[in-house]
Image (cartoon, rainbow, N blue to C red):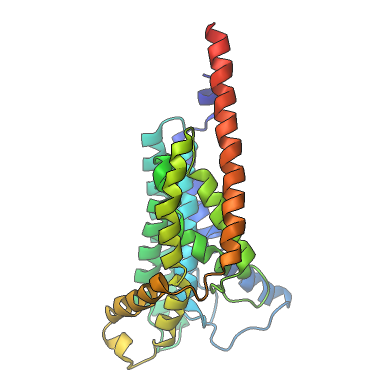
Length: 297
C-alpha cells in the first residue's frame, strides 16, 4: 500500500517522458550548441543558419541521430514504471514520447523548409531516421520497465553498445559517435546483466542470449559509421536508402564470427559487475520475503 501511494500519477508521465526524449536524449546536441554560445568550441561551417532542434546538418548527423533518439526513447519508455498502473504508465509514456517526437520533428522540418539548412541536406531522411530510432528506444524502455526480467538483457543490448557515443558527446567538441570505450561498455553491460535478474537465480540463464546479442551488436557503431561515410549526393546509398540494411547486416555478420574489437577484458569486468548487482537484487528479494513471512507468522 505504501509503495502504491508513493507512485506518481500517470498524467505526470506525459510531460516527463516528452522531456526525457528530447532534453535528455539530445542533451549532447543541446550542450554542443551551448558550448558554441559561451565560446568553449568554435562554430562549424556546416551549421545551419540558426538552431535546429534535431542535428540535420552536423558531420555526424546519421550516427548522432540514431544514438540520441534511441537513448531518448529508452529514457521515455522507462518513465512508464513510475505510476502504480503499468497499463496507464505505458500509455502515458508512449503518448508523451510520440508527442515530443512529433513536435520536435515538426519544428525541425519547418525550420528546414524555410531555408535554414544547406541545399544538399536531407531533412526528410533525417526525420525518418530519428523517428525510427526513437520508436525502437521507446520499445526498449517499455520492455525494461514493464517486461519480464528474462528479456531485459536482450532489450538493453543495443543501448549498451551505443551509450558510450552519447556520453562522449557531452564533452565540448566531441561528436556523438560510438568509439567502443571499454570501461563504459563494461559498466553498461554489467548493469544490463544485473537488471536481468529479479527474484530467482535461474534468471541468470538469460545472460547467455543477452551476451550473444551484445556480442553481435558491438558492430552496430562501426556499421552506422560505414553507412554515414557512404552518404553523399548521388551516392548509391542516397539513391537506394534500403541498401543501408545490407551494409549493417554485413558488419553485424562479421562481428558474429570474429573476436576483434570485442575487448574481452571488458566482458570479464561486466560479468563481475553484473554478478554483484544480481546478488544484491536476489538478497534484497530474499530479505523482503523473510520480512513478509515474519509478518504473517
